[in-house]
Image (tube, rainbow, N blue to C red; front, side, top):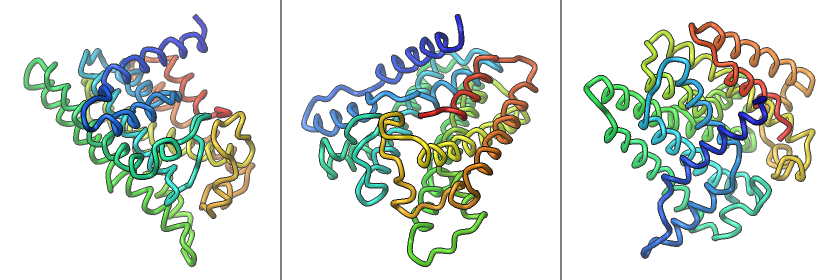
Length: 300
């Protein structure tokens, strides 16, 4: 089986897990549940659940509890996309090649659909306790929940989103430090959450978790810079969402600050460093290494 076939198979498995944990659209709240399902079922790479699962395989077999967190992190990622697309933020009408949640369901339902996915993510993750066998597993799940909460919150993704929004305001001072904070938190934090949770649930020690977090940080920053590159060089047909939105919204990006060629060079450096860390562990995962390179150098 070649990489493309293996990726399709593993993405399908992640897709099945995510859909398995989605709540059914029923009851008086059926409309918001339907909107949540619409956003999640838009597809995508299922990058974060994949990275979580593949990282866990470097250190052990975490069992059923892993699937709870795989679904949870995809719910959090999807909620962030719903909110990012809103008129008050990026104001995008298309996501993954189809109309965004607020265009289909209205801004009001889209907002609470995002809220619903965020809260339901933690309902889903805590179900991992039902699978725990012994104190050590309870502690690992508790640690994983702490990581998920912090990396998705004001000291992670939300903090990065805040800095990103403020950087767009008239008169904002745009510095390299600001840009680094945005990339490290808005994008990299959730990738760090995925990979470190995978490591923690599989029994990695403290030093190994720190190394995973370092690698994931590089992956996240490279992923964001590549996203900025594609916003300049790609098209709606290829990317599945409008291009040129960064310029339209006067966004601070690595490309606007350093230019296209320097941005491509930085992506290569970060990618090589990230893969080198993954190769340093006693057990190798060649698929994970290929996945990282494929995602960083993606065209959409």
